[in-house]
Amino acid sequence: MAKIIAGVAMSHSPMIMTNEAGGGDKGQRFLNTAAKMKKYLEDSGVDVIVLVSDDHFNSYFYDHMPSFTIGIGECEGWGDWQLPKYKIPVQQELAEHILNTSLENNVDFAFTLKMKVDHGHTQGIYFLNPDLQIPVVPIAVNTSAPPLPTMDRCFQIGEIIRKAIESWDKDLKVAIVASGGLSHWVPIPKIESEKQEDQFLINVLKNGRQRIKQLDEYLKLRETNVTRIKSGPVNEQIDREFLCLVTEKDYAALRNWSAEYIEEHLGNGGQEIRNWLVLLGALENFDASVACYEPIPEWVTGMAIVQFRQPIQQKSNTKQEKEVSI
Image 1 (cartoon, rainbow, N blue to C red):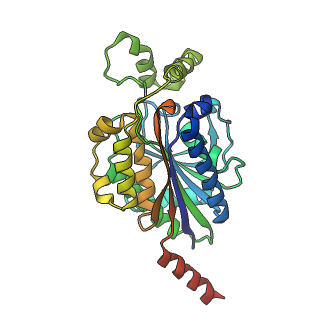
Image 2 (image 1 turned 135 degrees about the horizontal axis):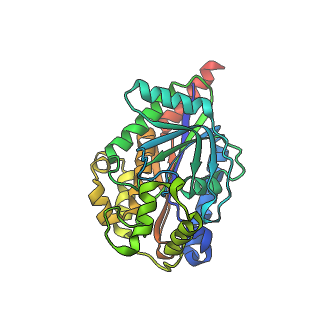
Image 3 (image 1 turned 30 degrees about the vertical axis):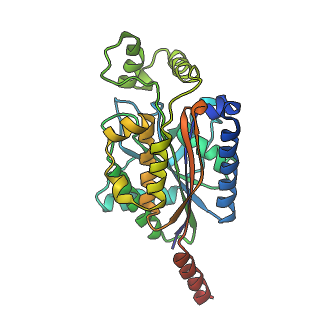
């Protein structure tokens, strides 16, 4: 049977691609740690990565906004923020097994045979799997368009993913990777805004990419709104509180965090910690350690990487099982 053997949760920021130098020494420490996580996954002998992230109004809009989407066929990157337009290899058998297991457990994923993902997913690929040697199961969580799935529901999705992987009849090693957060504020208008300057973007958010007559104008406006920010607010205190709850496995507290609380303290971009909750549900018994945390206003984000390892007892049991089989 398949086994989950490793996990990595990490922040993403488009500013890494457009202003890497702006991160200074703090940014370099983050990048160095990301390289170590790549080696960690390689050394672990990971066969499949379940990659959980979100979409930033590139694939999903208010005309159709699923809470959870799984790719079970082709997967391609949009190539936003100077990232490659990856043709991401999908482990379709596991993806379909997760989808079917979820349905059998009263969880209804949206699914797609032609998934397109933006920097939320592709930055994780860029740092951890750039050569695309490890096939991926891509999962997208709605963290952008309220109403959002609850933190508790995200954790439950992770539990279902774990159940599916552990019931998959393939002797393969699986890693869970979550990409998103921590605290940051994104210049996307609220859908109910009546400000005249917001109406172009709001019209796009409501009607979807296929209705955009001036796509280049839309993409340029969004990029301009972000790149003109030379420094953004980061809430280091709440970031560290969140990381403490993760490493102490106080999942009950995190599952009760409301969208309103997150918006106030971590910003609208901080809603991406839902991706981490999916991972936590899947890796509930794993030991977590903060490999890196850097508040980087120049990247407009609290940048963290957390490494998840199998508990010592679980490792011991796995070793004994191998010895018995021999």
